[in-house]
Length: 378
Image (tube, rainbow, N blue to C red; front, side, top):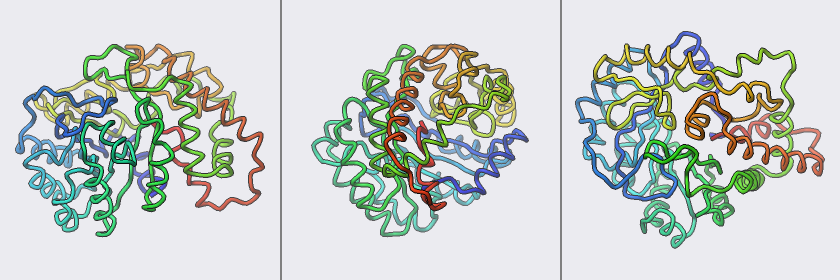
């Protein structure tokens, strides 16, 4: 699946208009059997997580409030001893379930996933060679991950690869993309790593990430390898077009993504956030109930205002800057995240050079024009 289905876009747009939490993200655990350097949630200290009955109660409340799409994530969700019980119950509730996983523990659960097919399984892949994989993830699990990927595909389970490119796996970009093409799998990747503020790091700090310009070069390189020069140039022309001067720039100071508008994130300890990368604002569904926590979050997100500088920028329509980036980079919603600015401007400059050198085909099919749907998506 290269692009989001139109029916999903329609449903999310309607949910935003009506303040319905149509998408939920359940962060079932902070524990993981890997130790990836850019991770925003996993740490070695074991902490008490929500129990089975609590997750089931929250899921029932979310369903009654209108949640349809449900992502199960972590940490590594398959580490939970009650994963089969939770997954089965969530499936019977009628959710369209996606799962984020590192893939190392999936194999025993394939019969379960065949019985109750998920909407999609997203497998993180940060290297495509055993030693590089072990070095990056801190676990010698490359073969088991590849085996799981192949068995998921063989059993007809919808599958996507996710990857984040950092200073520690920069050399693996072409190999990861080669792997995705050899296995005929869509790869969603980014060279942007959020600061690890949820783990107590300083705003703007993620030691594993590339410099803004290195990240831009990596992002463009990866997309050229994935989509080809002509398709990249075609998509870049559309995405990098200047904003209409008649735009109501005040709209660009509001949260415009789905976070806290039709989507919520429930952490492993029961707190509700707009998204994984945004620890504030925060509400407490275990204390006030799901509905009230969602209403509080909805109102708090409506009050957020992003930087004025960003709203006046000629790139405002195509720039990926969001509330989570502003807050995690600067500690404020209203301050411009300079790292993100340098990163995206670097992408723009490189893209403009490619467009100049590329004679885009006169006819590109509709399928090809959608092939870059996740350009610059973080």
